[in-house]
Length: 611
Ligand code: AGP
Image (cartoon, rainbow, N blue to C red):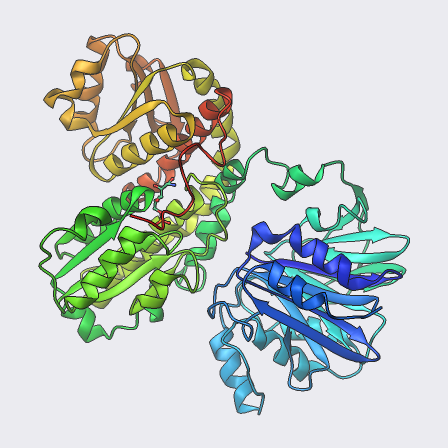
């Protein structure tokens, strides 16, 4: 996820771009750049690191330019660097582009363009767009953009400038947001509303497969496929700046919960063949022989990322058939490790900076293991020290409580399971198709269920916001989800909550059950359903207050539980991914009702970079 800003009009463009990028930094902040037209020449400035670095450079740049583009980056392809920062140029330097999205077929396009003599200067997927437009450029930028994007697979929100047409900017979008701002003193484009609010509240939302030509006094929208003009309504925004940064959500955590369908889609996009379920993970960087020679997998992580590892153990052992160990990183690094070249060690980390996980990675490398990390931050320390990285494409996760990063980690681990099973031939073609289809369907299912689940969890949150304790139960691959639900609740509402394997109830926790003890159990109709239900009966017999998350087709749940959260039926293996959602929403609602600081809970940091 990145931030784009563009302007053309009567005002000086540099301050508008820099202020707009500042308001979009939550969308990405590992590098930034700006370009404007000065005396017929495009002037481009780019910096690695926070936007403040670019602002410092621009302090010494004097210009009265009235047209330009800016970009703040969240790297997906190519680590953060000045060379990989946007804007990117074509060979001539007369055309520049800023982009938010993922170009899935960029390697193919890059090979074709290189063969035609184009010279690339970055490792990004975006740069291929600049050269592709250059290929189609004759006398009209809008036409060239429209022709070029027909060859693109993936998602894009674009801002494009050509010095030969100094009186216009071109914008285009497909599955990445882009909003236009209109005002008497100029026309704007931006990835999100906050960038526009200081200058105008009158906006036009570009829809998918639409493009726009922005001039100082006009803004025309066209269809991307055939160029026909589209009449768009101007809408007036009444959000304040704070609300707008969260896209109207009260907290980043809630916004990120609702971003999960897109985050899951972006994580499997370009890696999973939706028809066959075949997975391609070249970023692993290991040959089929090396993968075939593995005798063990060792997953190492902390907190929520450790819960993702616990779920993956069930998947990997079920479908790949080799032993999987899961360790909390702070334990892993201090015990005698039996590793070696036949063991693949997989550190999992949203931030890529967690000290204990990094220490575990370094130990694993010393002991000769292959280290393939799963991470959400391109170029973070853990990724730089791994032999390979499978990136989650969740975009920046601002809320301290991890949500979209977690479900994106599960997505990446499911892709890895399919990939290893296909390489080691432990998964049949039919199974690949079935499992791949199940994953492809998840974004839409979650998208549809989120509003209803929020409504239901708001009600249940009301009933339990004054609880002092909470018990979460699960079996099989849903046991880690019980742990995750408990962690979400305790870290943002400060209620003491524990996740337990339901079968462990009789081994101690059942002593806690009384009329004041809420017990949430994950009860899908899976292979251990009957066992789980008998655990629920044990709780009921001791007057525990039951909340059950289970199949919407299971009427029996209402007979044994005070509260039931009905869920759509999905493939058994993906129930953990889906059943996480109501637990996130419950924790959010209870924390809200208790007046807690949801995005920045007490005592916590987003990244634990110390032991
Ligand atoms: C999750 O909600 C917590 N904020 C925390 O447990 C987190 O998952 C843990 O610190 C690991 O962080 P990482 O994924 O960035 O390594």
